[in-house]
Image (cartoon, rainbow, N blue to C red; front, side, top):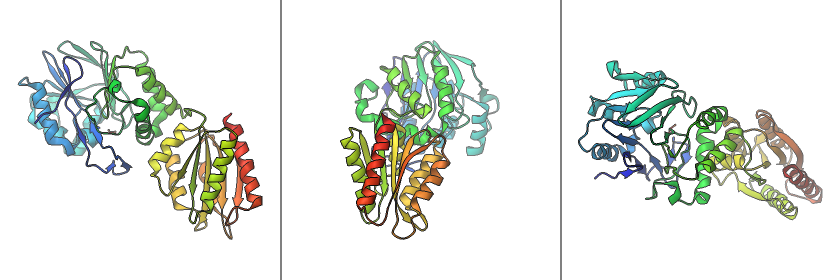
Length: 397
Ligand code: FEO
């Protein structure tokens, strides 16, 4: 049975949620599931904006038919071709042979590559600033390359002030009845918004900045993303977060302390460091890199103002969980933080050297203190940890 929601009188959500998925993109845990959003504009003419993931195909197809309610589909607008939004597209194109397909040239190339679709005279290839009227709705198209793939565009409906924003402004998490941002507790959800942004789009901060500049010229009343709730209030708060994240600027003065420990001695060093920082009035978030998925650590790194990295030496390098975390930071173009590096090694410490090599691959990372623990913290290394805490606390003031 269909399950659709009116966003406005004639814009209808026809998406669905997946709660069985374990890893989004087969990479990121989604313990609260994920929604695939899709929208129908239903005026004297109709348009479908994006399709859904194959995992919700049946629900999506029923929803579209219910929303159209006997009206023919005039346009299928493809803002993004990643298969979480396009793996049902071939089916939709086949079931609605009357519909014209609206997309960028790159998106049409991807349709051919993914499912051999040759649109022929069904294609309407659009570029920056092109417009389309769908009944009373006046749509304009803005390219948004690398937010999150190169073919991406967003669609703005000036008649209603609705921005169909593709992946931008989305989040992990299934729709739990609350379709709109004003029905959710953003303070509770912001962690998942951040984890979605940083891991999915975080590498492409400059591209997001370009999109934000374009959006600044629009009067936006509603944001309809491809994942998560629709935004119809407090939009500047969401844009402010995106602005910070895409500039790689911290949200507050919190210090992120991440440790990789084998037998507890490096963990002990991390907790001593956190205690010293606490005594100095600093806010600290401590994570065991072996126990927490790196997507959460990357997200926290974007949030925090400075980093403490503590790891045991391993295979003449650094413990694998720290290596994975630092590789993930570099892969997401993370930059511009002050850092302390604390290594542990029982005979030939190598963790510090390896962590510094990895930090040097990121832009504008400044190491403000270093320390070495030899097997377990002693009075000498304890003092080095206290010194590191003081340097870090000074760095965030
Ligand atoms: Fe939700 Fe880049 O796809």
